[in-house]
Amino acid sequence: MSALDILKELLNYYGGGSLWKEVKEVFESEGVPWREKDFSSPFQNLVAVILSQNTSDRNSTRAYIGLLKKFGKITPETLRKAREEEIREAIKPGGLYNLKAKRLKELAEVFDKINIEKLRQMGREEARKELMKIKGIGQKSADVFLNYVLGKPSFPIDTNIKRVIKRLGWVKEGANYEEMRRVLENKIPKKYWRRAHELLIRLGRDLCRPRNPKCGECPIREFCEFGKRYKRD
Image 1 (cartoon, one colour):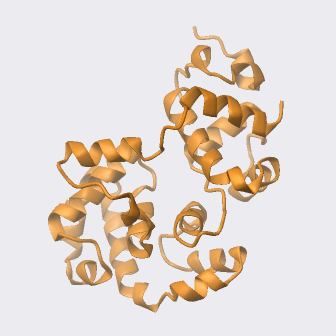
Image 2 (cartoon, rainbow, N blue to C red):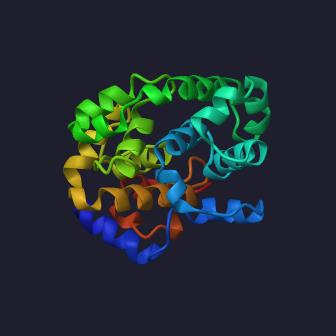
Image 3 (cartoon, rainbow, N blue to C red):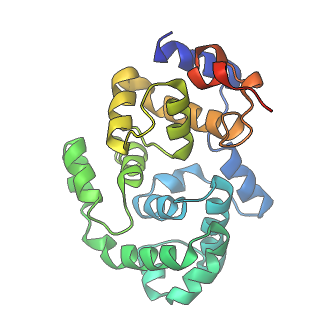
């Protein structure tokens, strides 16, 4: 079965649900107005991707909301003026708050020197290299920014996607980020990259978990090398 056929199975399983559902739920539970468009703002998107590193969406969203509650708005000027310890306290729910607070301060200091319009005019790979020169912005973070802010199709790979495609047998166990990105972008037509990114993340979160995966409930188990072999003790 092709990658596109597998995506169709996932789409049938999940329907039209949005990846933002969990994020929106956290905003609502914290009593903070939810506006998806904020995450396509260049600075706020970079803040969000730094906060999302090595944690769950729920925790990174709580950290983002912590900044909103502490400072009222998230702008380069606001974070430049803030003390690093204030940022640390605000983002504690997201984990790794010492490192992330430092990265956010560094981002705020250099952001005004980043020419967003110039990045829009660059080719994807050139823009990606420029983004990765910013401290705290790695491969996945750059791909998220390319996709959701610059409108340059790319395929960000988080730990959920990595686990799913390894279990499907699409990449070898030792494959690095660039190898995985290349495989996904070759297997899946470009117009489906964003939706595929969202569906694979949801599958990894909900069913294809690191421990005790729910293979029996998985809509693509029969096409998955791991799923066919997996037996829960």
